[in-house]
Length: 145
Image 1 (spheres, one colour):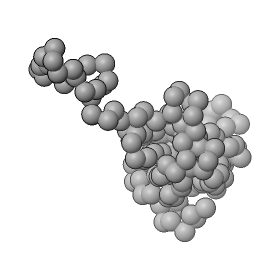
Image 2: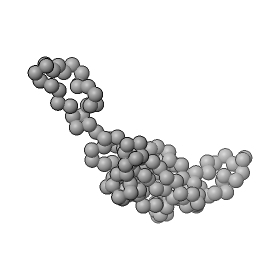
Image 3: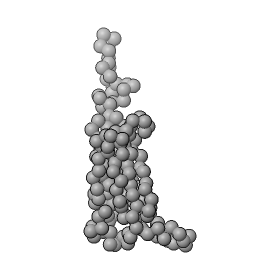
């Protein structure tokens, strides 16, 4: 945990929550190994990269501890402060579109699992169902999709 980052002092985060990112494709059916996952603070004055993780063979990142507001904030209905911390998650993997999840909630004492379902980039840069707009093919030249 990065308690030495000055921004934590102003946020008043004294609890600890946990995050695991599950990187996959095909609507979660195929885990993706080797994806780079960046965790950033989700508050306006706190958006620095906190951690850089890599997904394993099972598509999961290691569990990371993140600072949160104390659990006691969620016990009172009259409490005006939010009882969770917000973090942003970015996932990068060659051959796939970059994925960004904003304001992922992390609660004190809870392990959150953030799915990251990656979408492959087509080989030709266009959807496989049709050629680029305006491109014409003759019958003797079948399209190379």
